[in-house]
Image (cartoon, rainbow, N blue to C red):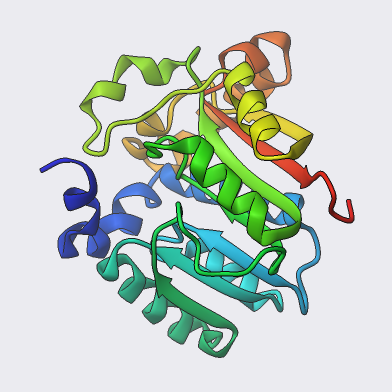
Length: 239
């Protein structure tokens, strides 16, 4: 089963976190959450939208930090997992989960202080349209990640159930320009691909992660990183 059918299946949603963020995958979860927090900054009292929120990993985290957050996703099964996660964390009253299409966001212009999407653009069939919608509903900040075309991910990319679009820095820049966004920062990480970390115990994974991080601080790291985190400002926004 491929594509959107696979993503929206009940069993995929139920096993999503445990398959991706247990074992060495915990290091991925930690890094992604840090990237979101560093990009968006203090969120208490802010209105935030997460595109493709999935099981609510980031949605619940930001609600715990005081954000008023909306999580949007195409999968009812994923949203059910997110609602349960929010309930367990005691932040359900700070989150609204919506099923919707990221290409036609049901919000007015400049509605949110920040809009972000993690693990989304590698699946986007019309990335320019999605980026334009994120920019439209944000007052200030847009944050997202991409998987990169010059990385180890090319080795197994074709095996993934949802497929995966890999980006160059120039492609990302064109997306931002087309949406009226100004690049503020780009960070590049994980020379070793995510799939590697998920296969090994967390203790061993940390040793590889230390080497990965050290190499990532060199020119080689920027050139061959699997993942990039991009922070952009709305051109007529307050940033």
